[in-house]
Image (cartoon, rainbow, N blue to C red; front, side, top):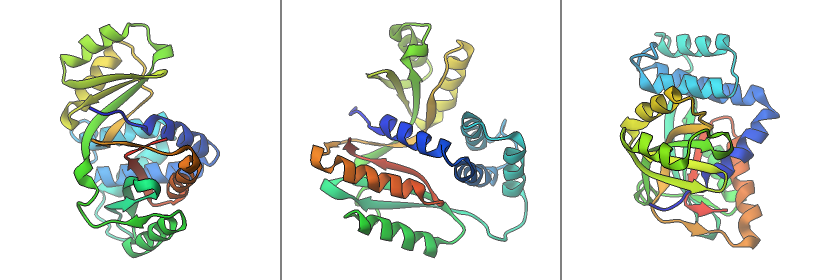
Amino acid sequence: MSGHNKWANIHVRKEAMDKKKGKVFSKVAKFIEISARKGGDPITNPSLRMAIDKARSYNMPNDNIQRAIKKGSGESKEGQLEETVYEAYGPEGSQLIIEVITDNKNRTLSEVRHILSTYGGRLAENGSVKWNFNQMGVIRIDKSKLKKSEDEIELLTIDVGAEDIKSRGDVLEIFTKTDHLEKIKEVLKKENIEIEDFGLEWIAKNEIDAPETSKDHIEKLFEALYDNDDVNEIYSNVNL
């Protein structure tokens, strides 16, 4: 399985989000609200449990979390949120999958199209980008915080469904099928292994390296997309 560049993007995004917590709380609340449509109990709704864990990783107040759960599991249809996935091409032949949560698809489509156009990208037809991605569960661990060896982590997680483990600089990445993500998280928690980041992600089968002259331009595209209130996640096949 090929590598993935999302760790660098996470650091960029979290640093930006720390400077504007109101915006990140709004994005996470949307994620919780959408997940709560499948049921307001995180014990029986794994999607909601994952959304709540994400919110807590950003230190989102519990009142905000509960408010989003109640809104999502309620019967009101006013301003109802919808999930949409856009496929796009970026500079230097890069491919993007853009996940959005919005209450106005037309507005969001127009804004995303404008951002892509500004940085030399364009929307793609359905399926023209996704063929190069697999959706997988991904867990990232900061190796500097590990109290076990990487071999021990591998043995622990392979037994409960880990398909691949990669050491990438100061980060250990664990890849698994989507339905094994929670099992692996629970095993790591029982062993008091701190999880830095986790989620269901679109992982590129074939990646490309961005030329040095284009890296800044592509990073600005990602930052502009992340800055949009309706954009929840971005995945790309480009290594920065």
